[in-house]
Length: 219
Image 1 (cartoon, one colour):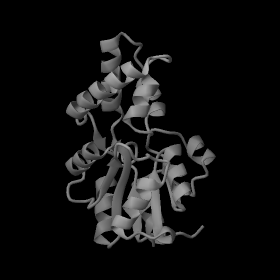
Image 2 (spheres, one colour):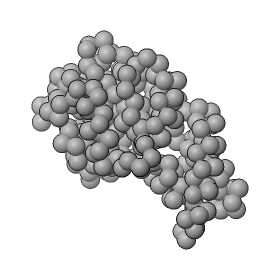
Image 3 (cartoon, one colour):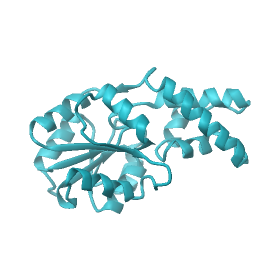
């Protein structure tokens, strides 16, 4: 059995893509930029809000303009981050079951730290004692710096910790941190991407994930 499970947030615990896409396209409209489809946004997210802005603005947009859009985008998204967002079916129950069994859980996300804590507590109240989001001046996933900070907070050891996410960024984070990785197939990215990143495990349902966690690392 894994004793600690660290979850990605967007695309793993919460389906946030509609609110992110709506906020991005709102900013595009304000600046007269082309808008993007939800499927396009699924490929843009994962490396934090600043990188998302960089990806949805046209190539060649000045740094000054990007910075202004980033500030406005963050404020707009913060006001609308729960318009359409919802937990993936079965995930709140899974997290509760893990806690019932004495397994420690935490969240590591590239969403801004205060914003991440607010949205997790809204949809997963009292389930995650530690939520680690992005902090200005600190590297984000897949750099393992904040992962190590989080692991120290919860007393996690590499050999008994599972990292769960939906993207290449998450699989790279687990690999960089020396953790076992599990890719979920209900998120924003494809099976092919997760296989390409050599995820240790792939699961299609929360029940499969629960079984994996209880069975432990048997690869």
